[in-house]
Length: 390
Image (cartoon, rainbow, N blue to C red; front, side, top):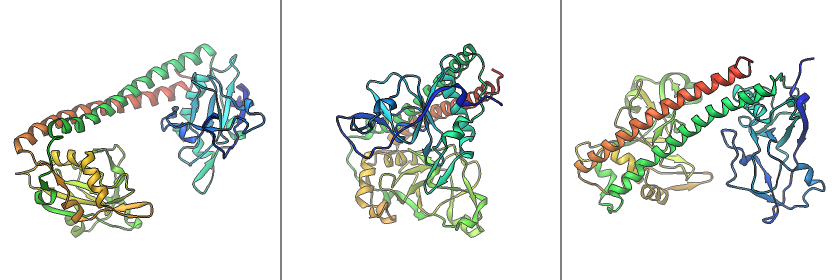
């Protein structure tokens, strides 16, 4: 019989549920304590009574333990975290299975990386049992996962190599975060003290125009379509755009071109009004119905300036004040957007600002491309490592 994960563990204990909270109680790991990148997030700590379980000490976590997230949404089931030195005692909920390795046979750092690789490869997605909004991987299926580790020395070597490659990725991501902070910081430094003296509508030469609505059956091939999940914080995401079938008239009415600004008009209040400046389109595209497109009078206002203003707290507050609220979502209309008040510096000042923003964007693009290469290298290292070739 081929070796499996369960052969190398001293313990594989599911956690326990507790619906009570106690501000002076013990910290219990929950699903929100696992980040998107399978790291630990401790910003929010849920505490439960210390007598919540009569054998609560059996659920304590220690450095080197791995918490496998066995129950979560389908896309998040299978994440895992490696417990480091913590600043307080902790237990874990029934959403997790605690894996404690036999240190004579299996290095926990190696196992954590091994489980991450399987999660990213979709292994656990194929093992889940799903129901409404949730899914789970059974403890038996997890322990039956084939595993034939190399020597402890090589396990530690592989884990170290992956740790170093991962550290490079994290630093690159941190660079992107800092670069994305520069544009609002620069805007505030140059224009933050100016009072609004102009309505956005006075600077628009076309629009705002609502986007294209098409039924789900029209999606799959055709023209790329900008959707609300295509951008964030004023930058395009890397995910590929969906395609939709359009007529000649629809394309003429709903196409986007470089220099256009697109604003989200229907969303949760926290995301309402998120906006993007259209740049560097790879091919002719259109935009979806939950957004508005506007085109500016470039002789008096620059798109780079307006998109940066739309990302400020002042713009966000004005949008929130105009929002029509309904259950779970809010909306704004064309008049709301046209009525937004903003400061209008001279065109020369705007150009100075735009030149700086373009330099920031160029550096961000350079770092983003480097991160893509880092991601590819890390994926290749994982694949090589767990095929026994590293």
